Image 1 (tube, rainbow, N blue to C red):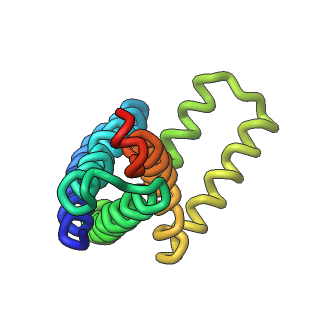
Image 2 (cartoon, one colour; image 1 turned 30 degrees about the horizontal axis):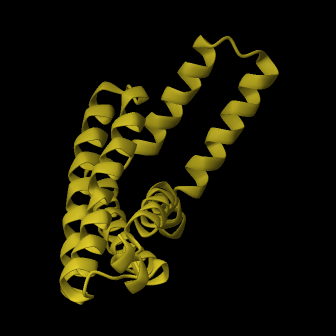
Length: 177
């Protein structure tokens, strides 16, 4: 089981990290961040499909075709934690080495977008203050880590929950099916 969790977690982490680095590089160069959010979450769903694979593999190969909801969710949670940690580590390297002014460019994009949407003077001041707050928080590695985990962990938890619900099977369910 540990090998299944580790392999699925690492592969999921690599998949989502490759998409993230590619997307960040494209956004960084073009300063257009709009499509990257959709691509980012789609890549997370693709990567976290390995949760389903890992739980099913455990159920079918190591648990005689049975797995409780709790055990399935735990497997999904561990895969999520491994993949998310890979994602966070890769973002830290990417951010500090290749795109150290990423937050500056992102904040400028959000402000330009707000201007295009026609925000009033007071609303624009509020948006600028909000983005300045994010830029300030992003100066702390701890905050970068927390924000990055907050991007990916909820997606993995939802996929873990759904996988556990779909794949759970007790011995009595197996006999009646």
